[in-house]
Image 1: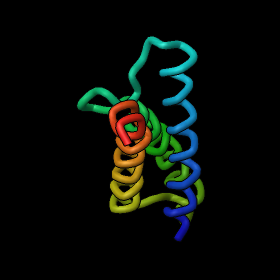
Image 2 (image 1 turned 30 degrees about the vertical axis):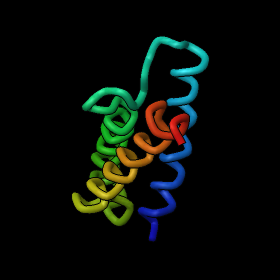
Image 3 (image 1 turned 180 degrees about the vertical axis):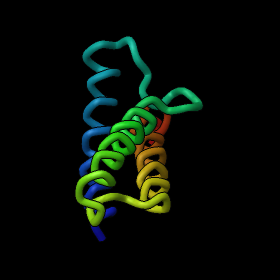
Image 4 (image 1 turned 60 degrees about the horizontal axis):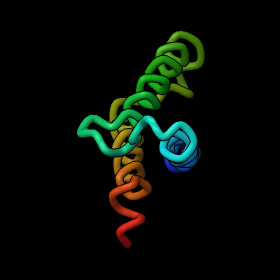
Length: 89
């Protein structure tokens, strides 16, 4: 259940930075590459936080299946909120 809440927060952050990157800077297409930048950056951050949690409070650490689920949620959320999907609809 914690994974869904964390995924929701990460999806909001991902959508915000994707919109910021496209609308404000107009230099980065957040969801237009094969290896999407947003989910990859957030996954790297999660893994770093997870390594710290493994050393300290092990009960807050995420296992491999939870990290994969979060990455999948972020990839699908980036595709849906990206430039190629929503404006077409």
